Image (cartoon, rainbow, N blue to C red; front, side, top):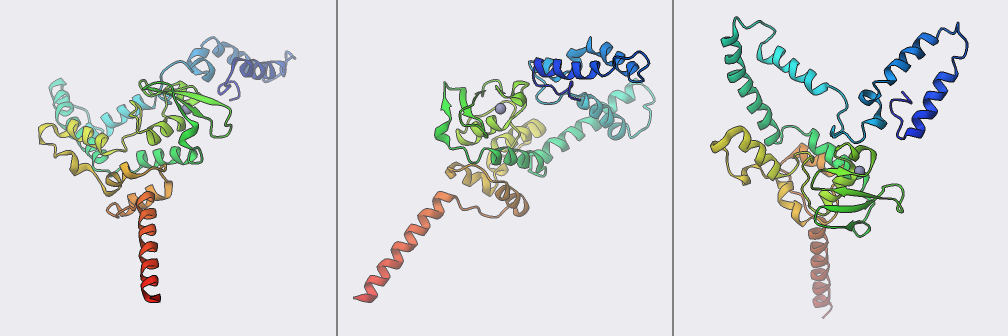
Length: 275
Ligand SMILES: [Zn+2]
């Protein structure tokens, strides 16, 4: 495990030395295992994290996508039965698979799936204590974002290709630094989860084509209040918004203005009463 998840080549060397130095005797029962690991090291590009950092996996280092696709095909499309011939198989794929894909796209478009929104809110919450002033815009697409733990360390975020200089972002996964730029600077990312009304509208257009309702149909109360928000998103707020879905969210700026107006009115009334 230490070898698999080693972040640098030095860490990998240390971990491998530690493993192989333990088995110095010929009759050691662990010798067979070490020989097996040594053989697998020749295919290290396939399973060592340190050698896969420059591959755009978008954070998914397994074959889960292909496994899931086969499960969908067997369980949902064919319902664990055999197609009688090739024509029947094509018919299943063109009708049942089509309607399944439309349903899946619409479940995201209608906001029935909370996981992308909660995942995004969780990433934002990790960077909530970082102020916008600490980040530097290098150009239209690149930003220098401070580390959440060390203010002196900066990560370069590329919004054009959805990349970051951190371990997760290097492989193209949507990391907290990219979420910071997406949230605070309102910059679109190719790998960002579908959390905005525009994203949901794009998914619905893909599913429904010309029959798709207009963009406003996919906006919720939270989206309407989003442009006015200056502070970052909040996990609690996201959770409550998803639970009530239609609850009006008052923005921090608006509430402050309302409080100021209310206090001014109270002062004016008090002055009138004194007179
Ligand atoms: Zn990052």
